Length: 128
Image 1 (cartoon, helix red, strand yellow):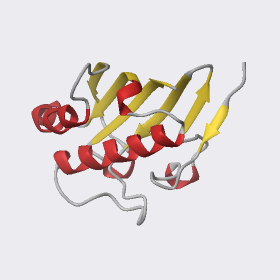
Image 2 (cartoon, helix red, strand yellow):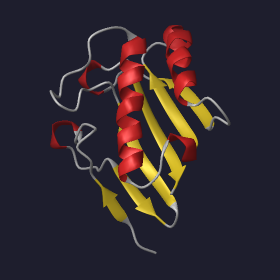
Image 3 (cartoon, one colour):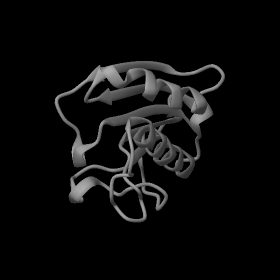
């Protein structure tokens, strides 16, 4: 069993040099670190509400998956972390536009805080 580190330019690098990778590919699967609404070009959180952050987080996740030889259509499980489940409907509306057919299994949990003041973070496991 071997593992391949995935690092792409289309998504933010590990936050503040933290010791993790954007993703690891191994034995037909890719395990993606959580993505927040950071703009990969500026390193800043996108302007706007939880919908805007969800959109950017999913764009970041898509870039990582494609860099691993996968894609959103290959995702089998996501976990969504939110700082306020009262914003679930807004997040879910954006999320649904990225997973239009046969969406993956998903867990959504409320957390006390996320990096960089993010309101949403999304991680995924996908087939390669």
